[in-house]
Image (cartoon, rainbow, N blue to C red; front, side):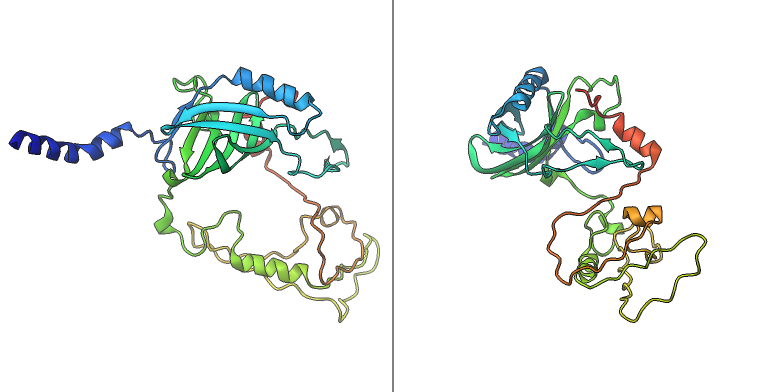
Length: 290
């Protein structure tokens, strides 16, 4: 009798340590992950067949086990992520070929209410799985393990959304959303978008100084500072709210008035990246010809 009680107490005391020892910490933000090593060559062959197929509902099947359950992904090409006339234009006006056939969406075969979306590159899936028991993230192992490491034999890692934590949350203040998009910033952007705006008239290098703004010109209110920072930086305000347009970066301005309620759902996006960061990120992907 005493031995059974003692054994039960021992298990209750030792269980947290046993569970902790079985968990794999990926980094300081992800408390537990599991490796994936399914046959990527088979998935790559399916991807090539799906890309050649004229049937947009052609399925790519991917099955694996992780986190004590079996995942049966049924994926189809995602044709809604980009419009049919989507194009990428370089700084000199040249057009770049863009292949979006690696984008997929679908669901789990045994979970009709689930959602899966991501990409398949060289037979390796990366993306998010939203199931009835929670959300999972799948990423390539190269993002976390050094080349030629002992764990690089696995090509992917999968972890639960609940295993992601922010160890620096106590040092942050205000809104914790990413990409600088707070509720205040969204409201500021909507006010600018829904207001009539007159751009400055064209100017030349040898011409007279520009005339003062007309009474109908609206001044842009300064955006609120972004509070999601580990440092107590002073608020920064942008002098040119349209600095990411081509006109703002080439000196070619055109006069136009924006409608009060413009419901267009497309825009031109000007992106400028640091060459070293771009090279680091680009080296993590296979050649575009694949």
